[in-house]
Length: 70
Image 1 (cartoon, rainbow, N blue to C red):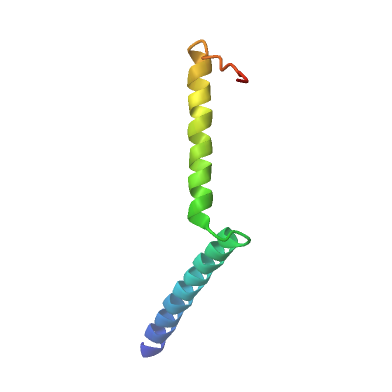
Image 2 (tube, rainbow, N blue to C red; image 1 turned 180 degrees about the vertical axis):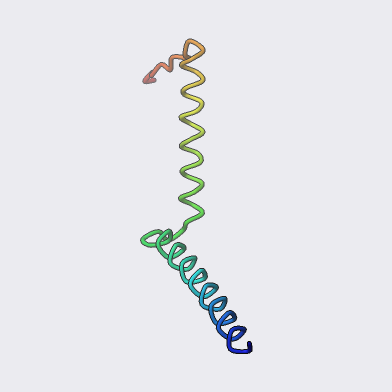
């Protein structure tokens, strides 16, 4: 009976270790090549907001922006 308990604890430990390793790999993959992850997320959010605004303006008839050189 003690042998089954030992095997069960070992399996649980192994699953936990594998889960932690998978989380570390995912974090490393997400950060690979990017120095400041938060900056990238902010830039993506700004880009999405700008696209959303452009879509809203175009659906309302659009506010045509005019370029003027003074």
